[in-house]
Every structure is written in C-alpha cells, then in structure tokens.
View (cartoon, rainbow, N blue to C red):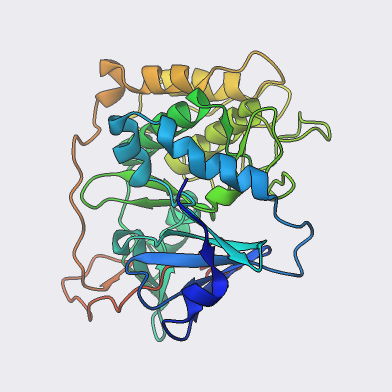
Length: 333
C-alpha cells in the first residue's frame, strides 16, 4: 500500500478548490496532484470512516491481473492513497473523473456542465424531444443501452470475483460515455466493501434503487445483482424510475434490436432468491445473439452543444468540466 500522506503536506502546495460535495465527503482539486483529486470525509457524516476498511480497498488493487487493472482503472475512481491528519484518517487521494464523462445539459438559456449519469439514460425520452432543453448527452438506442449494461456487468463480475460488494448502486453514481466506446464508470468507490468485512462507512442504499428483499440486512452481492437488473431495465426501456412489479416481475416486450433473452435475466435477478451471478450476466450479454443491432464501437458525439430536437446549428463547445462525486444536483430536466 502507498505510504499515507499527511494533510499538511498535501495542502502545502497551495489552496484547495472544492469540486463537489455529497452526504459523507467533499472532493477537492489540490495543486501538484495532477489529474488526481482529494476526497475528505465530512465531520458531520453519520459514521467515522473505518481506517482498516479503506486499507483493504486500497490493497485490493495488488490482487488484480494486469488486464483487470486496466479495465477497472478506466471504470472506477478507486481510492489510492490515504490522507492522515495527526494520525487520524481524514480522506484519500483518487483519480479525477475523466472529461469524457461530462456533458452540457439543461435549460436552453443556461445549460450546465453535468456528469453523464445513468439517470440521463433512464429519462432520455423526457428531454431529447423537449425544445426548451439543449443537451450534449448522447442519443442512445436500446441496443446502445444494452452495450452499456454489458460493460457494467463485466465490471461487476470482476469486482465480485474479489469479494467486493458495490452496495449503493444508483442513477447518480453510475456514469457513462460513448467516447471512444460505450463505457460505464462507478464513482463513490469508498462505499464498496469486502464480503464478511465492514465498510469505510455503514452500508446504505439510494431511494428508488433499494433491494426490497434485504429485509434490513446489509447490502450484498445478491443485492448488487438486483440493482444491475434495475439499471438494465431503466436504461434499455427508458423507464425512468419504474421497475417491474412484484411478485410476478413481468418485463415488457424487448425494444427493437434487443434480444428477448434479457427479459428473463432481469426477471430472475429481481426474485427474492436464485438470482444469477454477475458472471452469468456477462456471459449471456456476450452471446452472439445479444449483438444484433449493437455497435461494436460507438465513437463520441460532436463536442458542440446541440439542441434536443434535430438541428444543424451547433452551439459553443463544452467548458472545462469539474470532477465531482455523488452529490445532490438540481439537474432533473
């Protein structure tokens, strides 16, 4: 494990600039960190951060194969180095979120640079045809969304192999891009924990993404599978915050270009027991039948700001994005 950094050493290079704030931490840009950022635990958070749990997450990177390391480095913001203040855990250094996960989006008169969250997949029919909204969020077909689900499932398969529980999967901490191909990034990685071990903070779930079958128990790899199914349903069917209803969990007919096999996979993953594994998800999504209509590589969209409705006039390019974390936003258009 890299040697911890003392907070006074970290801040001696100049003033920190806050980039974003969530319920348990704030992220800062610090001079001389390059493309890394510093996440500081908030004193007002519900629980004190667990030093041993963060150590386990940082050390886990040493177990990855070279191929897994490349994959996860591009799809997570994994904690890298602890930051201590007089021996007490204060935060950690992690990679910043790459520019390709940011887009301009919002009301025409004042669009903002936002993280390209999973919510924009689920809610895409709400804004792509709204003339009052301009957006750089890529237009995604159901087969495109299936490609994103496949990418996410492969990441989950690797994490589960090493006993990781993602836990708090939600529409805000799953980011996605189409540049240079469809990829998914998971943020708030300090909320991960290892099976049988405590986490950096207490396990939590986000509203509208909770697994109702946990019955008060902590999140698990099985609840990760439930949320993978919710993510798939909301992205492929553009179903907003809906989910198939218990107890039948009937999934509607698959959209054009999406093989019908995905319906059964989602329905099985929502059941109280007998859920498929992330490895099974990845294997099914990798079958040749699943690639009908799916792009092998999806190149990035224009960097110009485009109206939601088709229009040949592009606006100004994106401003410089600001890496952030899972925080409350007012971008609900």
